[in-house]
Length: 209
Image (cartoon, rainbow, N blue to C red; front, top):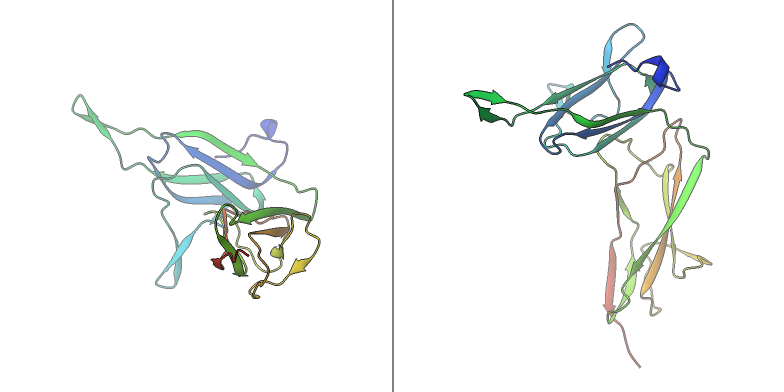
């Protein structure tokens, strides 16, 4: 698939969104881009596994909507898919496959950093936080991994974020809500994309006087 120059505002791409149709009916087998010497190479964030010390692409079975983010590349791509499901009609096997959308973009970020705050609450219960550990973060399939530089977290006990506290420290106050500020930083032309933030914590019954 080569992106026509007359419909693209950039000769590069760093993001592909795939929306299979019918949804969850196909497997994505690989995504590759054409290198300068004409060789096809796999995009860096496509999931792989080791087989005989060689990186082999993993099958993404029953694929829903997927977003792949990777370092910028020329806009000539090939997407390999598999359709294992079929129905019979007039003694023939009919396979349906395609995409509702294939969106190829070059995303530029106007800022090097971004942040958002998440409230975690025990309000409405008879419990309070006694210890809050650092959040566990997962990223979607096809997106760059994060590290301590690109994703950081800060812990606060008030909505105004007036005083920062350390994670994994015992809490003696009757705290029923904590606020976690997440800070994202770009690495090159990529920005981390988060799927989920899980907050490990300990709690105990709130002492009522």
